[in-house]
Image: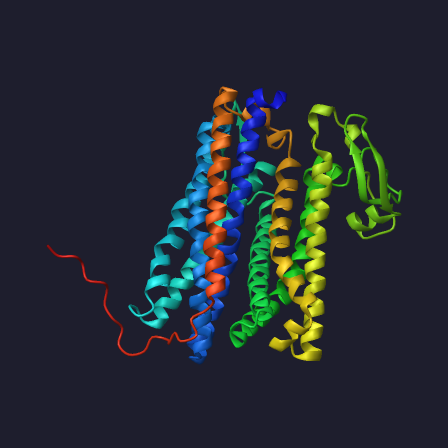
Length: 467
Protein backbone atom coordinates (compact mmCIF):
# COMPACT_ATOMS: atom_id res chain seq x y z
CA UNK A 1 0.00 0.00 0.00
CA UNK A 2 2.97 2.33 -0.50
CA UNK A 3 1.09 4.05 -3.31
CA UNK A 4 -1.21 5.65 -0.72
CA UNK A 5 1.71 7.85 0.32
CA UNK A 6 2.95 8.56 -3.22
CA UNK A 7 1.70 11.93 -4.48
CA UNK A 8 2.63 11.24 -8.10
CA UNK A 9 0.80 7.91 -8.17
CA UNK A 10 -2.30 9.41 -6.54
CA UNK A 11 -2.28 12.39 -8.91
CA UNK A 12 -2.00 10.03 -11.87
CA UNK A 13 -4.89 7.97 -10.53
CA UNK A 14 -7.00 11.08 -10.06
CA UNK A 15 -6.34 12.34 -13.57
CA UNK A 16 -7.01 8.87 -14.97
CA UNK A 17 -10.35 8.74 -13.12
CA UNK A 18 -11.49 12.16 -14.29
CA UNK A 19 -10.29 11.61 -17.87
CA UNK A 20 -11.86 8.16 -18.23
CA UNK A 21 -15.17 9.32 -16.79
CA UNK A 22 -15.26 12.56 -18.76
CA UNK A 23 -14.50 10.73 -22.01
CA UNK A 24 -17.79 8.81 -21.78
CA UNK A 25 -19.92 11.89 -22.47
CA UNK A 26 -18.38 14.05 -25.24
CA UNK A 27 -17.87 10.88 -27.27
CA UNK A 28 -21.63 10.50 -27.69
CA UNK A 29 -22.48 14.19 -27.95
CA UNK A 30 -19.83 14.71 -30.65
CA UNK A 31 -20.95 11.83 -32.87
CA UNK A 32 -24.64 12.28 -32.13
CA UNK A 33 -24.45 15.92 -33.23
CA UNK A 34 -23.51 14.76 -36.74
CA UNK A 35 -26.42 12.31 -36.63
CA UNK A 36 -28.78 15.18 -35.74
CA UNK A 37 -27.49 17.23 -38.68
CA UNK A 38 -28.27 14.33 -41.04
CA UNK A 39 -31.76 13.88 -39.60
CA UNK A 40 -32.62 17.55 -39.79
CA UNK A 41 -31.28 17.79 -43.34
CA UNK A 42 -33.53 14.89 -44.32
CA UNK A 43 -36.52 16.63 -42.73
CA UNK A 44 -35.81 19.93 -44.51
CA UNK A 45 -35.50 18.14 -47.84
CA UNK A 46 -38.55 15.85 -47.55
CA UNK A 47 -40.76 17.44 -44.84
CA UNK A 48 -41.36 13.90 -43.59
CA UNK A 49 -42.49 14.11 -39.93
CA UNK A 50 -40.55 10.91 -39.15
CA UNK A 51 -37.23 12.71 -39.56
CA UNK A 52 -38.41 15.62 -37.42
CA UNK A 53 -39.44 13.27 -34.61
CA UNK A 54 -36.11 11.45 -34.94
CA UNK A 55 -34.22 14.70 -34.43
CA UNK A 56 -36.33 15.69 -31.41
CA UNK A 57 -35.92 12.31 -29.72
CA UNK A 58 -32.15 11.85 -30.17
CA UNK A 59 -31.54 15.48 -29.16
CA UNK A 60 -32.68 14.54 -25.64
CA UNK A 61 -29.81 12.08 -25.28
CA UNK A 62 -27.47 14.65 -26.76
CA UNK A 63 -28.25 17.31 -24.18
CA UNK A 64 -28.01 14.81 -21.31
CA UNK A 65 -24.49 13.85 -22.40
CA UNK A 66 -23.55 17.47 -23.05
CA UNK A 67 -24.51 18.53 -19.53
CA UNK A 68 -22.62 15.75 -17.76
CA UNK A 69 -19.66 16.25 -20.09
CA UNK A 70 -19.40 19.89 -19.00
CA UNK A 71 -19.74 19.01 -15.31
CA UNK A 72 -17.11 16.27 -15.47
CA UNK A 73 -14.67 18.13 -17.72
CA UNK A 74 -14.10 21.20 -15.59
CA UNK A 75 -12.39 19.36 -12.68
CA UNK A 76 -10.11 17.60 -15.17
CA UNK A 77 -8.81 20.89 -16.58
CA UNK A 78 -8.38 22.47 -13.14
CA UNK A 79 -5.94 19.70 -12.27
CA UNK A 80 -3.36 21.23 -14.60
CA UNK A 81 -3.09 24.04 -12.06
CA UNK A 82 -3.48 22.00 -8.89
CA UNK A 83 -1.90 18.56 -9.37
CA UNK A 84 0.28 19.30 -12.43
CA UNK A 85 1.54 22.85 -11.90
CA UNK A 86 5.16 22.10 -13.03
CA UNK A 87 3.76 20.71 -16.29
CA UNK A 88 1.66 23.85 -16.80
CA UNK A 89 4.71 26.04 -16.20
CA UNK A 90 6.84 23.92 -18.53
CA UNK A 91 4.45 23.87 -21.52
CA UNK A 92 1.95 26.60 -20.67
CA UNK A 93 2.83 28.92 -23.57
CA UNK A 94 1.53 26.35 -26.03
CA UNK A 95 -0.64 23.95 -24.05
CA UNK A 96 -2.56 26.67 -22.27
CA UNK A 97 -3.18 28.54 -25.50
CA UNK A 98 -4.55 25.47 -27.27
CA UNK A 99 -6.87 24.59 -24.39
CA UNK A 100 -7.97 28.23 -24.43
CA UNK A 101 -8.73 27.93 -28.15
CA UNK A 102 -10.84 24.86 -27.40
CA UNK A 103 -12.85 26.71 -24.79
CA UNK A 104 -13.26 30.00 -26.66
CA UNK A 105 -13.71 28.68 -30.21
CA UNK A 106 -15.22 25.22 -29.89
CA UNK A 107 -17.05 24.90 -26.58
CA UNK A 108 -18.55 28.41 -26.71
CA UNK A 109 -19.67 27.85 -30.30
CA UNK A 110 -21.37 24.60 -29.34
CA UNK A 111 -22.92 26.02 -26.17
CA UNK A 112 -23.97 29.25 -27.86
CA UNK A 113 -26.07 27.57 -30.55
CA UNK A 114 -27.30 24.74 -28.30
CA UNK A 115 -30.22 26.80 -26.96
CA UNK A 116 -31.49 27.53 -30.47
CA UNK A 117 -31.14 23.89 -31.43
CA UNK A 118 -33.14 22.70 -28.42
CA UNK A 119 -35.76 25.43 -27.98
CA UNK A 120 -35.91 27.25 -31.28
CA UNK A 121 -38.05 24.88 -33.33
CA UNK A 122 -41.07 27.22 -33.31
CA UNK A 123 -39.14 30.45 -32.82
CA UNK A 124 -36.69 30.64 -35.73
CA UNK A 125 -37.06 29.70 -39.40
CA UNK A 126 -36.24 26.05 -40.20
CA UNK A 127 -33.10 26.98 -42.14
CA UNK A 128 -31.77 29.01 -39.20
CA UNK A 129 -32.52 26.13 -36.87
CA UNK A 130 -30.66 23.76 -39.19
CA UNK A 131 -27.67 26.10 -39.29
CA UNK A 132 -27.72 26.16 -35.47
CA UNK A 133 -27.57 22.36 -35.40
CA UNK A 134 -24.69 22.48 -37.87
CA UNK A 135 -22.85 24.96 -35.63
CA UNK A 136 -23.39 22.72 -32.60
CA UNK A 137 -21.93 19.76 -34.48
CA UNK A 138 -19.08 21.87 -35.82
CA UNK A 139 -18.23 23.17 -32.35
CA UNK A 140 -18.30 19.68 -30.84
CA UNK A 141 -15.98 18.31 -33.49
CA UNK A 142 -13.73 21.37 -33.33
CA UNK A 143 -13.21 20.46 -29.67
CA UNK A 144 -11.90 17.09 -30.81
CA UNK A 145 -9.39 18.85 -33.06
CA UNK A 146 -8.01 21.16 -30.38
CA UNK A 147 -7.89 18.55 -27.61
CA UNK A 148 -6.24 15.95 -29.83
CA UNK A 149 -3.79 18.54 -31.13
CA UNK A 150 -2.77 19.36 -27.55
CA UNK A 151 -2.48 15.71 -26.53
CA UNK A 152 -0.62 14.84 -29.73
CA UNK A 153 1.88 17.58 -28.94
CA UNK A 154 2.62 15.83 -25.64
CA UNK A 155 3.36 12.70 -27.69
CA UNK A 156 5.48 14.41 -30.37
CA UNK A 157 6.44 17.95 -29.27
CA UNK A 158 7.24 20.29 -32.15
CA UNK A 159 7.21 23.94 -33.17
CA UNK A 160 9.65 25.32 -30.63
CA UNK A 161 12.56 24.70 -28.31
CA UNK A 162 13.09 23.66 -24.69
CA UNK A 163 15.40 25.67 -22.47
CA UNK A 164 15.62 26.60 -18.79
CA UNK A 165 12.70 24.32 -17.91
CA UNK A 166 10.33 25.96 -20.36
CA UNK A 167 8.98 25.38 -23.86
CA UNK A 168 9.38 28.39 -26.12
CA UNK A 169 6.95 28.48 -29.04
CA UNK A 170 8.63 29.43 -32.31
CA UNK A 171 5.93 28.38 -34.77
CA UNK A 172 2.39 27.81 -33.57
CA UNK A 173 1.34 26.17 -36.82
CA UNK A 174 4.11 23.56 -36.58
CA UNK A 175 3.28 22.96 -32.92
CA UNK A 176 -0.41 22.46 -33.66
CA UNK A 177 0.36 20.39 -36.74
CA UNK A 178 2.76 18.11 -34.86
CA UNK A 179 3.56 14.65 -36.30
CA UNK A 180 0.83 12.87 -34.31
CA UNK A 181 -1.96 15.41 -34.86
CA UNK A 182 -3.58 14.55 -38.18
CA UNK A 183 -3.92 10.79 -37.72
CA UNK A 184 -4.92 11.20 -34.08
CA UNK A 185 -7.73 13.63 -34.91
CA UNK A 186 -8.98 11.36 -37.69
CA UNK A 187 -8.83 8.26 -35.48
CA UNK A 188 -10.70 9.92 -32.61
CA UNK A 189 -13.29 11.62 -34.84
CA UNK A 190 -14.15 8.31 -36.45
CA UNK A 191 -14.31 6.71 -32.99
CA UNK A 192 -16.88 9.24 -31.76
CA UNK A 193 -19.11 8.69 -34.80
CA UNK A 194 -18.77 4.90 -34.63
CA UNK A 195 -19.52 4.71 -30.91
CA UNK A 196 -22.47 7.09 -31.25
CA UNK A 197 -23.95 4.97 -34.03
CA UNK A 198 -23.45 1.87 -31.90
CA UNK A 199 -25.49 3.56 -29.16
CA UNK A 200 -28.23 4.53 -31.64
CA UNK A 201 -28.26 0.99 -33.05
CA UNK A 202 -28.31 -0.56 -29.56
CA UNK A 203 -31.25 1.57 -28.38
CA UNK A 204 -33.07 0.86 -31.63
CA UNK A 205 -32.44 -2.89 -31.39
CA UNK A 206 -33.63 -2.96 -27.78
CA UNK A 207 -36.80 -1.06 -28.72
CA UNK A 208 -37.48 -3.33 -31.70
CA UNK A 209 -36.91 -6.35 -29.48
CA UNK A 210 -39.57 -4.91 -27.18
CA UNK A 211 -41.92 -4.08 -30.05
CA UNK A 212 -41.85 -0.34 -29.33
CA UNK A 213 -42.29 2.33 -32.08
CA UNK A 214 -41.26 -0.16 -34.74
CA UNK A 215 -41.28 2.15 -37.77
CA UNK A 216 -39.37 4.82 -35.85
CA UNK A 217 -36.60 2.59 -34.51
CA UNK A 218 -36.39 0.50 -37.66
CA UNK A 219 -35.40 3.66 -39.53
CA UNK A 220 -32.90 4.81 -36.89
CA UNK A 221 -31.27 1.37 -36.84
CA UNK A 222 -30.91 1.31 -40.61
CA UNK A 223 -29.51 4.82 -40.76
CA UNK A 224 -26.97 3.99 -38.05
CA UNK A 225 -26.05 0.84 -39.97
CA UNK A 226 -25.50 2.82 -43.19
CA UNK A 227 -23.21 5.26 -41.37
CA UNK A 228 -21.31 2.37 -39.76
CA UNK A 229 -20.91 0.80 -43.19
CA UNK A 230 -18.75 3.78 -44.10
CA UNK A 231 -17.09 4.53 -40.77
CA UNK A 232 -16.19 1.11 -39.30
CA UNK A 233 -13.87 -0.12 -42.09
CA UNK A 234 -12.19 3.29 -42.38
CA UNK A 235 -11.63 3.28 -38.62
CA UNK A 236 -9.68 0.03 -38.85
CA UNK A 237 -7.41 1.58 -41.49
CA UNK A 238 -7.02 4.75 -39.40
CA UNK A 239 -6.10 2.67 -36.36
CA UNK A 240 -3.50 0.78 -38.35
CA UNK A 241 -1.99 4.03 -39.60
CA UNK A 242 -1.83 5.31 -36.01
CA UNK A 243 0.04 2.17 -34.97
CA UNK A 244 2.56 2.67 -37.78
CA UNK A 245 3.01 6.23 -36.55
CA UNK A 246 3.76 4.93 -33.07
CA UNK A 247 6.38 2.60 -34.53
CA UNK A 248 8.09 5.62 -36.10
CA UNK A 249 7.94 8.12 -33.24
CA UNK A 250 7.50 6.12 -30.01
CA UNK A 251 9.34 2.79 -30.29
CA UNK A 252 9.09 2.11 -26.54
CA UNK A 253 5.29 2.28 -26.75
CA UNK A 254 5.30 -0.07 -29.75
CA UNK A 255 7.45 -2.55 -27.86
CA UNK A 256 5.05 -2.41 -24.89
CA UNK A 257 2.00 -2.81 -27.16
CA UNK A 258 3.52 -6.01 -28.54
CA UNK A 259 5.21 -7.17 -25.29
CA UNK A 260 8.42 -7.32 -27.32
CA UNK A 261 11.43 -7.60 -25.01
CA UNK A 262 14.31 -8.47 -27.32
CA UNK A 263 15.47 -6.73 -30.48
CA UNK A 264 14.37 -8.11 -33.82
CA UNK A 265 16.74 -7.68 -36.75
CA UNK A 266 15.96 -6.91 -40.37
CA UNK A 267 15.33 -10.10 -42.30
CA UNK A 268 13.65 -11.90 -39.39
CA UNK A 269 10.03 -13.08 -39.31
CA UNK A 270 9.10 -12.60 -35.63
CA UNK A 271 5.78 -13.94 -34.34
CA UNK A 272 2.92 -11.70 -33.31
CA UNK A 273 1.74 -12.44 -29.77
CA UNK A 274 -2.03 -12.81 -29.50
CA UNK A 275 -1.99 -13.37 -25.73
CA UNK A 276 0.94 -13.28 -23.33
CA UNK A 277 1.94 -12.91 -19.70
CA UNK A 278 4.47 -10.05 -19.64
CA UNK A 279 6.87 -10.03 -16.68
CA UNK A 280 8.60 -6.67 -16.39
CA UNK A 281 10.76 -7.78 -13.45
CA UNK A 282 12.39 -10.50 -15.57
CA UNK A 283 12.18 -8.64 -18.85
CA UNK A 284 10.34 -11.41 -20.68
CA UNK A 285 6.97 -13.04 -21.27
CA UNK A 286 6.37 -15.95 -18.93
CA UNK A 287 4.34 -17.47 -21.74
CA UNK A 288 2.74 -16.33 -24.95
CA UNK A 289 0.66 -17.60 -27.84
CA UNK A 290 1.55 -16.07 -31.17
CA UNK A 291 1.08 -16.18 -34.91
CA UNK A 292 4.34 -17.17 -36.65
CA UNK A 293 5.68 -14.33 -38.78
CA UNK A 294 2.74 -12.13 -37.86
CA UNK A 295 4.65 -9.09 -36.56
CA UNK A 296 6.39 -8.35 -39.86
CA UNK A 297 3.07 -8.60 -41.71
CA UNK A 298 1.38 -6.20 -39.28
CA UNK A 299 4.19 -3.64 -39.25
CA UNK A 300 5.26 -3.77 -42.88
CA UNK A 301 2.86 -5.99 -44.81
CA UNK A 302 5.65 -8.36 -45.81
CA UNK A 303 6.97 -11.75 -44.61
CA UNK A 304 10.26 -10.37 -43.24
CA UNK A 305 11.24 -7.17 -41.47
CA UNK A 306 13.07 -4.62 -43.59
CA UNK A 307 14.50 -2.79 -40.58
CA UNK A 308 15.42 -3.51 -36.97
CA UNK A 309 12.73 -3.36 -34.28
CA UNK A 310 13.92 -2.64 -30.76
CA UNK A 311 12.69 -4.58 -27.75
CA UNK A 312 12.03 -3.17 -24.29
CA UNK A 313 15.24 -4.60 -22.83
CA UNK A 314 17.29 -2.37 -25.14
CA UNK A 315 16.28 0.66 -23.05
CA UNK A 316 17.12 1.30 -19.38
CA UNK A 317 14.28 0.38 -17.06
CA UNK A 318 13.59 4.04 -16.22
CA UNK A 319 13.20 4.96 -19.92
CA UNK A 320 10.36 2.59 -20.81
CA UNK A 321 6.74 1.98 -19.77
CA UNK A 322 6.24 -0.18 -16.68
CA UNK A 323 2.64 -1.37 -17.07
CA UNK A 324 3.39 -3.54 -20.09
CA UNK A 325 0.56 -6.00 -19.47
CA UNK A 326 -2.04 -3.22 -19.31
CA UNK A 327 -0.77 -1.63 -22.52
CA UNK A 328 -0.51 -5.00 -24.29
CA UNK A 329 -4.08 -6.09 -23.55
CA UNK A 330 -5.65 -2.62 -23.88
CA UNK A 331 -4.33 -2.45 -27.44
CA UNK A 332 -5.71 -5.90 -28.28
CA UNK A 333 -9.05 -5.11 -26.68
CA UNK A 334 -9.38 -1.92 -28.73
CA UNK A 335 -8.38 -3.60 -32.00
CA UNK A 336 -10.49 -6.70 -31.29
CA UNK A 337 -13.63 -4.68 -30.61
CA UNK A 338 -13.09 -2.66 -33.79
CA UNK A 339 -12.82 -5.83 -35.88
CA UNK A 340 -15.80 -7.44 -34.15
CA UNK A 341 -18.01 -4.37 -34.72
CA UNK A 342 -17.04 -4.34 -38.39
CA UNK A 343 -17.90 -8.03 -38.67
CA UNK A 344 -21.27 -7.47 -36.95
CA UNK A 345 -21.96 -4.56 -39.29
CA UNK A 346 -21.10 -6.69 -42.33
CA UNK A 347 -23.32 -9.55 -41.15
CA UNK A 348 -26.23 -7.16 -40.52
CA UNK A 349 -25.86 -5.65 -44.00
CA UNK A 350 -26.04 -9.15 -45.51
CA UNK A 351 -29.14 -9.95 -43.43
CA UNK A 352 -30.67 -6.63 -44.49
CA UNK A 353 -30.14 -7.54 -48.13
CA UNK A 354 -31.54 -11.07 -47.68
CA UNK A 355 -34.41 -10.49 -45.24
CA UNK A 356 -35.09 -6.76 -45.25
CA UNK A 357 -34.44 -6.51 -41.49
CA UNK A 358 -38.11 -6.01 -40.77
CA UNK A 359 -39.06 -5.16 -37.18
CA UNK A 360 -40.28 -8.68 -36.45
CA UNK A 361 -36.89 -10.05 -37.49
CA UNK A 362 -35.33 -8.58 -34.34
CA UNK A 363 -37.76 -10.53 -32.15
CA UNK A 364 -37.27 -13.71 -34.13
CA UNK A 365 -33.48 -13.48 -34.11
CA UNK A 366 -32.90 -12.26 -30.58
CA UNK A 367 -29.20 -13.05 -30.78
CA UNK A 368 -28.74 -10.27 -33.35
CA UNK A 369 -30.54 -7.76 -31.16
CA UNK A 370 -28.39 -8.64 -28.18
CA UNK A 371 -25.20 -8.44 -30.24
CA UNK A 372 -26.09 -4.86 -31.12
CA UNK A 373 -27.15 -4.04 -27.55
CA UNK A 374 -23.78 -5.27 -26.22
CA UNK A 375 -21.90 -3.49 -29.00
CA UNK A 376 -22.67 -0.07 -27.46
CA UNK A 377 -20.70 -0.56 -24.20
CA UNK A 378 -18.03 -2.35 -26.23
CA UNK A 379 -17.58 0.82 -28.28
CA UNK A 380 -16.94 2.86 -25.14
CA UNK A 381 -14.55 0.19 -23.88
CA UNK A 382 -12.59 0.37 -27.13
CA UNK A 383 -12.20 4.15 -26.84
CA UNK A 384 -11.10 4.00 -23.21
CA UNK A 385 -8.64 1.21 -24.05
CA UNK A 386 -7.20 3.32 -26.85
CA UNK A 387 -6.59 6.20 -24.48
CA UNK A 388 -4.92 3.85 -22.01
CA UNK A 389 -2.51 2.77 -24.76
CA UNK A 390 -1.96 6.37 -25.80
CA UNK A 391 -1.27 7.83 -22.35
CA UNK A 392 0.07 4.95 -20.25
CA UNK A 393 2.26 3.87 -23.18
CA UNK A 394 3.86 7.35 -23.19
CA UNK A 395 5.27 6.81 -19.71
CA UNK A 396 7.58 7.61 -18.02
CA UNK A 397 7.18 10.87 -19.96
CA UNK A 398 4.44 13.48 -19.78
CA UNK A 399 6.08 15.44 -22.59
CA UNK A 400 7.67 12.64 -24.57
CA UNK A 401 11.45 12.74 -24.27
CA UNK A 402 11.43 16.12 -22.47
CA UNK A 403 9.57 16.06 -19.14
CA UNK A 404 9.15 13.02 -16.94
CA UNK A 405 5.85 12.42 -15.15
CA UNK A 406 7.59 12.42 -11.77
CA UNK A 407 8.83 15.96 -12.52
CA UNK A 408 5.47 17.17 -13.88
CA UNK A 409 3.44 16.57 -10.72
CA UNK A 410 2.88 19.18 -8.00
CA UNK A 411 4.48 18.48 -4.65
CA UNK A 412 1.29 18.15 -2.64
CA UNK A 413 0.68 16.21 0.58
CA UNK A 414 -0.40 12.72 -0.39
CA UNK A 415 -3.27 12.84 2.09
CA UNK A 416 -4.79 15.87 0.35
CA UNK A 417 -4.63 14.17 -3.05
CA UNK A 418 -6.18 11.03 -1.57
CA UNK A 419 -9.07 13.08 -0.19
CA UNK A 420 -9.71 14.77 -3.54
CA UNK A 421 -9.42 11.43 -5.35
CA UNK A 422 -11.99 9.88 -3.01
CA UNK A 423 -14.28 12.90 -3.43
CA UNK A 424 -14.12 12.72 -7.22
CA UNK A 425 -14.81 9.01 -7.11
CA UNK A 426 -17.96 9.56 -5.05
CA UNK A 427 -19.07 12.53 -7.15
CA UNK A 428 -18.61 10.75 -10.48
CA UNK A 429 -20.30 7.61 -9.22
CA UNK A 430 -23.30 9.77 -8.28
CA UNK A 431 -23.30 11.49 -11.67
CA UNK A 432 -23.14 8.12 -13.40
CA UNK A 433 -26.11 6.77 -11.47
CA UNK A 434 -28.24 9.83 -12.27
CA UNK A 435 -27.14 9.76 -15.93
CA UNK A 436 -28.20 6.14 -16.23
CA UNK A 437 -31.52 6.84 -14.51
CA UNK A 438 -32.39 9.80 -16.74
CA UNK A 439 -31.05 8.09 -19.85
CA UNK A 440 -33.12 4.98 -19.13
CA UNK A 441 -36.17 7.17 -18.57
CA UNK A 442 -35.73 8.81 -21.98
CA UNK A 443 -35.30 5.44 -23.68
CA UNK A 444 -38.25 3.81 -21.90
CA UNK A 445 -40.54 6.71 -22.70
CA UNK A 446 -39.49 6.57 -26.34
CA UNK A 447 -40.28 9.13 -29.03
CA UNK A 448 -43.39 11.29 -29.12
CA UNK A 449 -45.03 10.00 -32.30
CA UNK A 450 -47.78 12.63 -32.06
CA UNK A 451 -45.28 15.47 -32.32
CA UNK A 452 -45.97 17.58 -35.41
CA UNK A 453 -43.36 19.67 -37.23
CA UNK A 454 -43.59 23.44 -36.86
CA UNK A 455 -45.95 25.09 -39.33
CA UNK A 456 -47.23 28.60 -39.85
CA UNK A 457 -45.51 31.84 -38.88
CA UNK A 458 -42.51 31.75 -36.61
CA UNK A 459 -43.20 32.93 -33.09
CA UNK A 460 -40.99 35.55 -31.54
CA UNK A 461 -38.78 35.15 -28.49
CA UNK A 462 -40.18 34.44 -25.08
CA UNK A 463 -41.48 37.65 -23.41
CA UNK A 464 -39.29 39.12 -20.71
CA UNK A 465 -40.71 39.29 -17.17
CA UNK A 466 -42.16 42.65 -16.17
CA UNK A 467 -42.52 44.29 -12.81
